[in-house]
Length: 67
Image 1 (spheres, rainbow, N blue to C red):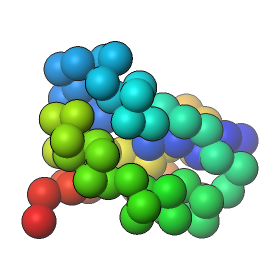
Image 2 (cartoon, one colour):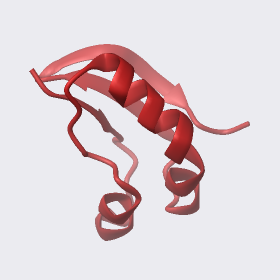
Image 3 (spheres, one colour):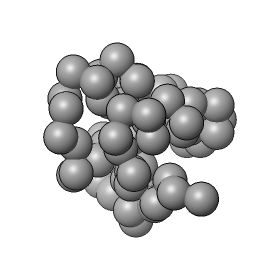
């Protein structure tokens, strides 16, 4: 299955997509590494919370990106 980060509170879908939200990864480790590198871009796009999905299954409860 594909791993991806999603957010329920997305106000600007275009900014979220540009920041990389919804990109699919081959493994959980790849998804987590990506988030470590790009969480500031997500914050800049107005995204303050993300959930890790494994296909249609929630793999990690919502997680705040705020410091």
